Length: 245
Ligand code: 6PG
Image (tube, rainbow, N blue to C red):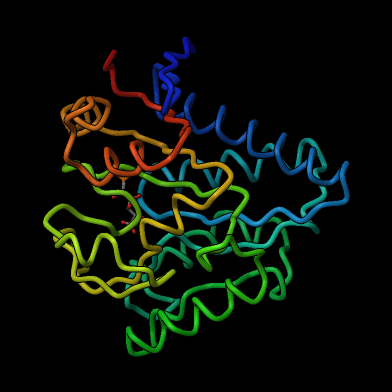
């Protein structure tokens, strides 16, 4: 795990998705235990996708082994598909199956995006809930303690995909409905400004076909959604099992 540190990001490379998921799990639990020592809440936004599933499995096993107290953790989502919470495509469903149920997280700590509702209503309700529970910055964006992001083959993060207009990119809504190029198309995502506002953002960049998107995102001229996040934030951590240096 040789970190490559640039002013805007830290790239930590791993030899496999399992090694990456275990390391991210260990470090996430460290963050939660630090919050516990300070009697502070831990507001986290989860992502979806394949590496997220491996990460949930690793975090669950480690939390049980370490007997980590998760009572301070409030769970939100970086994005959600516009499907019911029981649908196989639901990011909430994956987290519930592999993390939340396994760790007996109470409903009161779970703040899912209601993918079953009309997208505009679901986005507005999710925004109202996160802004009620999480401290806001001067722009009205929630200051989450940690946002997990996956990386798509074309450089998307959460459900922020290439090809959006500047107006969409710069729009202020905390959550907004989008039409994605990765199925399922109808999704709700945190906007860029909510991602920028977070104390920490950890990108779990894993799987075949991500090398080019990651490599471009790390350049000063990168045009991917991840590149935009890296430029807008002062620091972002990238856990990668792709071999880009
Ligand atoms: C989603 C995710 C999305 C995902 C990436 C990586 O809802 O689809 O939030 O951003 O994290 O597409 O997914 P994989 O890990 O499956 O490649």
